[in-house]
Amino acid sequence: MAQLPIRQSRRVAAQKATLKLQRRDDASDTDHADDTDDASPPTSQPSSPDDSPKPTKRRKPPLKPSASTNLTPTTPTPRTHPPTYHHPPLLTASHQTALLTWYSTTTRPMPWRQPFSPSQQRAYEVWISEIMLQQTRVATVVTYWTAWMARFPTLAALAAAAPDDVLAAWRGLGYYSRARRVHAAAGVCEARGGMPGTVGELVGVPGVGRYTAGAIAAIVFGRAEAMVDGNVERVLARQMGVYAHVKERRVGEAVWEAAQALVESVAAGEEVSERPGLWGQALMELGSTVCTPAPRCGVCPVTASCRVYQEGYTLAMGGSLEMEDVEECGLCAPFEDDGIPSVPKRSKQQDISPFFATPANKTTPAPDARTLEIIISHARRFPLKKPKKKVREEETLVCAIRAPGGRYLIHRRPEKGMLAGLWEFPSHLLPASNDSAAKARKVEAVAYVSNLASGAEKKVAKGKRKREAGARHVGELGSIPWLFSHLKLTMHVHLFEVDDVDREGPGSPRSRWASSEDIDKESMGTGMRKCWTLIKEAEI
Image (cartoon, rainbow, N blue to C red; front, side):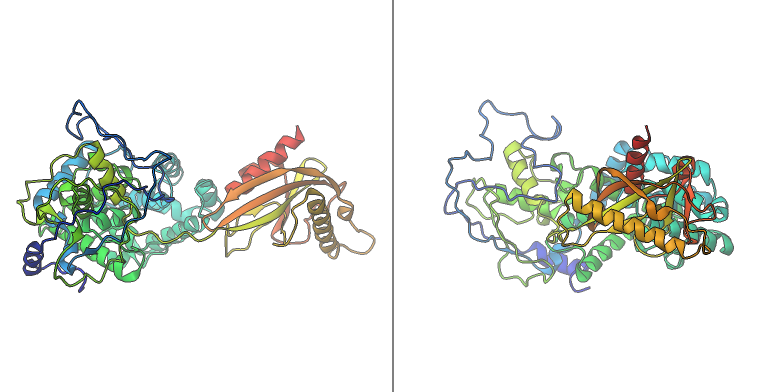
C-alpha cells in the first residue's frame, strides 16, 4: 500500500527529515483532555521503582493545575511526516527480541497456552479460547473454558452435542449467536475430518473470521500469519504513530499489512515454527496488560521502537512534531492540541523520533515522573477514537405467570435476532413514549397477559375454556437494568397467578409450562436469569 511502504530506500529518506524546534510562546500548563474510553487517568508516577531514575531532592509539582489557574487554549500542534514514518520500527530484530523476551518472562498462565505441538486437539482448544475471549475478560474465560472442555472434550463431542446443551454451557458469556456458530462449525469440521490449518481454509468455517483464523494458524500450526485483535490494533497504531480510526478500512488494512510484515520477519523464512504464535500472543499480551487504553509506558519493553512514545518525549522536551518539507502521510487525521503540557528545555534542533538517527541499541533516556506523565497523556490519544454512539434505551415488561404446583409459562425466542433461541418469561416491550409509572406499567402488563390467555383459548374446544383470562396480578417485583453492547434495557418484573392451565400447553409450540427445576436448567440470557432470581425470591 502507498501508506505503508516497507522499502529501505524510503526509510533512509525519512531518516533525513528533521524538525524545527519551536519554543512555546508561554510555558503555562494546560488541562489534559478527558478520555472517556479509558479506565483511569494517567499516572503521575512510574508503575515500578525501576521505571525511572531515583527522584532528586527537589521534585517538580504535579501537572494538574490548581482550581485558580487561568488556562488558555493553545494553537493546534502541527504533526506532519512522510508515509515512511509509519514503517514499523519493530521490524528491527533487536526490538522483536525485546518483546519476545518480555513475553517469555511475564506471560500469564492460561490453560489453553501450551508448548508448541501442532495437533487437532490443540486447534480445538485454541479455537474455543479465542471465541470465548472476544469481549470477555481472561479470568472469566478461564472458568468457562475449563468447564467447556470437561463437558465437550473434543471436536467430535461438541459436534454430537444437543444445541440446548451447548447454549447451557455458554450461559453467562453473552453473545449467544457465537455459541450457535461454534456448534455449527464443529459439525462442519468434523464432517471434513478436522480443523483446517491455513487461513484460507479456516475463514470458510462458520464463525471464524480473519483474526481467529490467523490465531489458529499461527499459534497451533506455526504459520507466519498475522492476528490482529483490538489490543494489537492499539499497540501497532502507537508503535507506528497512526493517528486515525483503526476501524476505517484503509487504516485497518495498513495495520494488518504491518502485522503481516512483522510476523513474516519474526518467522525468518521458516515455514513452520513456534515463533509466529509466540509473537502474536506477545503483541496481544502487551496490549492487554501494558499498552492499554490508559497505557503504562514506564514498564513497556518496546518504547525504543514506539513512534508515539518518542513523540511524547519530544513534546516533553519542548519540541515540535512537525517535519519540514515533507509529503504528508495521507493516513493520519488532523492533529489538534488539546492541552498536553510541555517542558521546554532546549533550543537546538532535535528529531521527532530519535531512533531515526541513532543505532537501534540506543534509546531515549529514562524519563522522570513529570516527563513520563506527558508521554502517557500523548499515548492515550492513539489511536484516534470515534465518538461513542448513544446507547438506545428501552423498557420491557417481564410477566411471570405462575400456575398451581409452582409451574411457570416460558416462551422461546425466535431463532434469529438478539438472544436467538433462548427461553424467557413472556415479555412485552413498552412504547418509547411511555411515562414508566408503576400504575401505567400494571395496566400494560394486565392487558398483555389477558391477550396471551385469549390467544390460548382459541385452541380449546367450546365448553373447555381455561381460566388464564382471569390471571391475577400479584404485583411488580422490581426492575432489572441490563446493558447490551447497543442497548440499555430495563426489565420490570410482574408476577401473575392463575388457578388452572391446559396441561397440553398454552397454545404455541414455542411455549410451555415448566417447573422451577426445569427453568433452572434452561438456556436463558443473563438478564432474564436475574429476573428469574427475583421471581424465585417472591416464592419464599
